[in-house]
Image 1 (cartoon, rainbow, N blue to C red):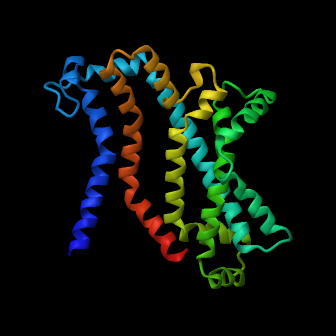
Image 2 (cartoon, one colour; image 1 turned 30 degrees about the vertical axis):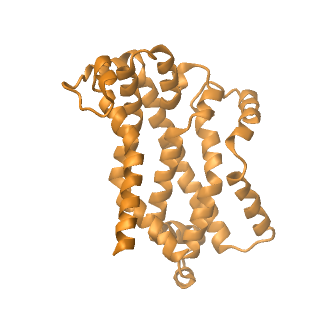
Length: 271
């Protein structure tokens, strides 16, 4: 009983520490400047919704929000599909050099983006892709492949081989086995992978800051930086801009948290 109470206490403290910055930011976005000075945890006397309107219009958050949404969708969908194909290839086919190639692919999880961003900048410049959404989409798809391939390989390895063998006897080819059998059976892990890709893409800051100088092609995290430089003295409007960034992620996480937990649990049990 004592261990359980201690575990609950640790979890409660962790939740408070994790949620406190978001709660403070949300409250601050609905206050006036004098109310923020009086106390950060106090509820606003009267919610100032105009802070959001001011941040959305004057901070051009509509454009940044559109860019972030387009980039996130354009990264998540191809990344999941390509990771499924590469993961299936490494899980079900044994070919010469497969282990070396798989180890080489996993190097993408070891090398940080900070070490790649400068050569990536010159590569995109060579192809004329700077200051465009493609400069954000293509590199992030490539950066997602290492983790995606690893996760999907483990998911497909957890599927009994007898299922694939029975499908071959029924006349199914490798393409049909992947998309009609393996892919549906691994749906929880695929949903988890898609959610992780969405969160990582939405929060990406360094890549957009480096490859896109034109604000027209910036995403929300970099847009908040530009907005902060202009509205540093107006904390409520700045907090409203920050809230615009994390509210969509919060909504997506709440909507798919059951699938995320199910996917992680499936990976733990089968992996």
